[in-house]
Length: 455
Ligand code: ATP
Image 1 (cartoon, rainbow, N blue to C red):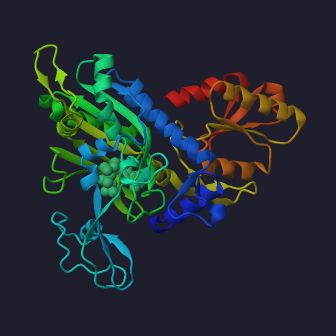
Image 2: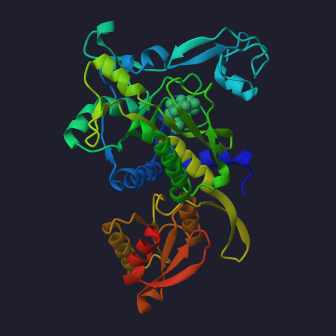
Image 3: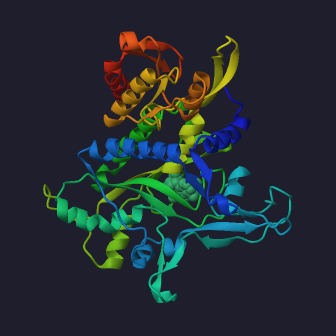
């Protein structure tokens, strides 16, 4: 067990040391709140994306995928209300000049956020007086073409959802599918956050995995419940988050967006507090109605059974990818004890990642750097890679150091090739979590791993 107060520091340092996450633009002195995903971090992120896509898009008959641009026609953001209302309430401390989100200060004080009544709230850092609230639009502006004027102003999308609503008409017309029909997308979103921070939790550019699930209005409540259950299953079965670290918070009518008929925030107990990991909303027919009004295109659906024409309701489950990476790393980072070669016990840091998400599935380690052992190990690693199993070959340093490195990057299985392997054509597979060892024939290793990856 790791003291929660130390967990973030341990994670940030491990993630940099082992190639998961580095500070962005570091050789130029850094760039606040930007992060590079290193070789293992990008692999972990990709494995999460793949698991999500397989589960919710290719694995289902009622969801299809799209990929829409980051920069869309600005009219789309006018229609969705983002241009006018996608803002955060901002206050500055008159004394220490620090900047805060008014809603966060109210939340921390246990006060009602609705109405943004800041009476009696002072700067949490120095007690200084706060300025009046200003509303700050979070969308990044950019210019298309050579002239920087209002006519050429465009916006970087603050969420991927907009693209799915705008593409709805084409998806509807090209597929002729019946409702319910979900449209899914994974991609970057950009928000000029006032208070970025907490490592990769709140950044100005991040990835979202979103589904707009179009349903008949009467089916919306049941679809909402079904997606809530799907989100729970995802957290428990895929990410292996302990259910006691995840809260499903029903958002009251006063606090949710005016168009939402129901919202549940999925919150994770990060070391810096319980915060939003995902969201689920019944957005009614708000988005399509707005886009229909602004685009003047018919965005309705004709029910083939009843001949009724209506604007579908939308259930929107949304998953932040970077917040998922952070929750997964935090959840599975652990320190236990391992035996040294002298038989003493020493602390061992280990990332107990679910095997399917681990960046490296198997490390093949010759016990000594002897040519015949090296040959078997290299060829085993290469066979595993050819079979689509991310495998590393490592012959550097002592076996203890190599185990430690693999434990810290979360590799579930270390395979050692020793002198006996030359006789019995077998290797020893060490389990990352139990540290138990099993002798397996070289020819069976691939099947042994595949069986465990799919179970
Ligand atoms: P918050 O209240 O934390 O600002 P939000 O309610 O504005 O979040 P949504 O608009 O619901 O967030 O965005 C959907 C998801 O996108 C969130 O649940 C979160 O996982 C992710 N997300 C939103 N903003 C950020 C950010 N600045 N950095 C990383 N992930 C983010």
